[in-house]
Image 1 (tube, helix red, strand yellow):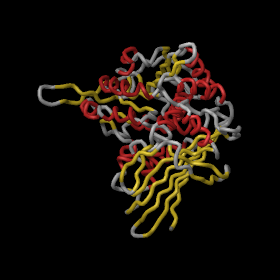
Image 2: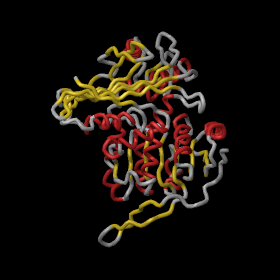
Image 3: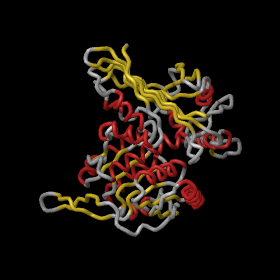
Image 4: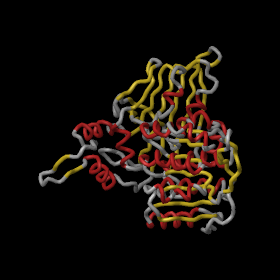
Length: 420
């Protein structure tokens, strides 16, 4: 059975740079914490669950500013984790970076489940501590800032991989698995969505991750490749119909962040690439209306009584209240690649449909977001990923091994190639 204990024995050996007179040399430094999990929410539960099954000998430390969240995490662990873990939890505010710096300096790899606004500061702190870092990302501007620390990360022998969730995250790696072997790439279409199994009109949606993350996807422009050039397109635009077995007719539309670094990585290699979010029909029409009347704006407005109101914050609170996660969900993923393999026209399709796990009580969105991040963190901690610096996951994560590990975790990823 699960038994939380304070980490006492030494963890993995990690490289630390010590400046000499002329060159830097690498020395081994023992660290007590193998996995530092920042946050104790839904995604953190999934990360701990995955690592407890695949690397239970590592020492774990979880930090969250809410004692209630920590207590809930321990309750979840007690009910769902059957192996003894070296686990410690701290109630502290991750937003006060200086207060978790000492933990980072004693950790092999940190996994950020915190708000994406913190990831730039967490990246800088992790590098200064010689601690590797992965995060769930979700904001292209923040990720761009993180890549500016590449030189410092290399110099400190640290690996930082942003955006390691579902989309971006698993989709990046599966896209690279899908394009493997193609000698010419015409198009890459990435379609992903988290939806309720039992939709309730009119939005036919429930919150399966943070409302701020959802609104961000609908507000900021999406990056696509069109005729070989990187372009910006408006989110919630270019609505298309898509048929999904078991769900019927769905819709897909542009949203921001999902393509992440793929547009830069595949520029000049593919003619067209886009990422669209899957929802039940009619969802985009309503959300577009909400967007057009300013409810997704961050600029403060003044109420009749002179009170300053942030419409975006209000919308987030309303979404949490009226669209709470209280039913079973599903994650739908479909990546379609068209081009040529050895001079012959081919189409390769990667699909995944995952559903709420009634045994672990983990939602499909939690499983499909947290498992990839935990898997990548484990690859770094155990030396399977050794390239240093701030890295694009599609270039450093071994895609075939990744697919095997996701299948082992219960995510049924299917891949088939057909003639066109």
